[in-house]
Length: 245
Image (tube, rainbow, N blue to C red; front, side, top):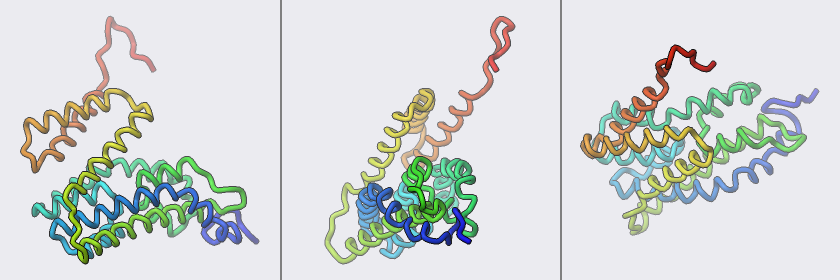
């Protein structure tokens, strides 16, 4: 008997590839380009080329990988890199929790689906449903795997090109800044609370003034978290009135 859900669900699984390819095509364009830049920047930083596909396979986070290259090239310790990566990708914890119900039928592949929740993959899986007759679990697995395959291919080709060809990588590390600008614009368009952006800007300015360049990102994140926690503190009552519930 065929089931409607599950990794091995009949023709639904076989038909999931085409809609997954259509859904991830915009991601292909972005990941291949950004991954290529990452591979070139990694090799230009003096790191071995094989580290690029290795990071694409086991880290799979564009911003964290670009940041990691800079930290590794500067001689940062493992603890510092781990802490920075945790702070930078803390939002992914919320991604995974919000998708647990959708991933309920994935069985042993659920951890991979949670691991593969990049911003773009989460955007697809949280907004798009597979066509009628297509197994939803297989569709989500293919979307996640295809997105990582695009990123892996871009990182690998970029690293190999940087090793074999005299490619000038100067300025390509700006791709990280461009990535954060895109994420910021997406958050602004989503109409997040205005104080989030004000706290972020103030924290960055204070970190730029008070912290040394090497610790700027860590200081800005720490100040930003402290500022956001402060904005969430309960406000004192006025004139004995009860706060709204």
